[in-house]
Image: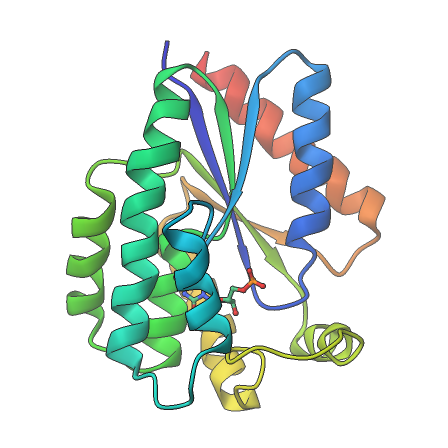
Length: 208
Ligand code: TMP
C-alpha cells in the first residue's frame, strides 16, 4: 500500500499551520494515519539547520540557503517521508520544494535550472501528490506578521521580495495545475477549511 503526500504552500501568515492541524484531525477521524511535518527541519539533523536558516547571520548567502534547505529536505525525505508513505500513511508537509523554487529561485534570484537540479538531487522521486497553495493579499500577510513576536531572516525581507514570492507561487500554480490548487485564504477559517476538504477528499477518492 502506498501513502499520499500533501504539501501546503503560501506566503508568511497565510494560515498554513491552522489548516494543516484541521486537515490532520479530519483525516484521522476518517480513519487515516496522518504524519504532519514542516520544512525546513523535522528531523534531528534538520532542526539545527532550520535554526541556522531562520536565525543565522546576515552573511548567509542565497547559495548556502539553497543548499541548507535541501540538506534538511534530503534527510527528511529519507528518514521520515519515504518510510511513512511506504507504510500507507498520509503525509502533510508545511512547505516543500515549491518554497525553494519561489524563495531561493525567484525571491533571492538564483538560477532556476540550478535550483531545480539541487531539488531533484535532494528529493529523487519523492514528489507531492497534491499541493494546497493558500493565497492571501500581501497586506493581510504583513498585518499578520506585524502581530507576531519577533521575526526571522525571511520575515525581515523587503516588500519587493514578497511580491516576487507571491508572483512566483501564482506562476507555479499555472505551470502545474494538476498538482497545485490555489485557495483564497483571505476568507473565513470555516470557508477555507471547507474548500480544502473538498479538494483533498476528491483527490483521495480519485486516487483510490
Ligand atoms: P516557517 O516554517 O515559519 O514558514 O519558516 C520557514 C521559512 O523558510 C519561510 O519564511 C519560508 C522559508 N523557506 C525557504 O525560503 N525555502 C524553502 O525551501 C523552505 C522550505 C522554506
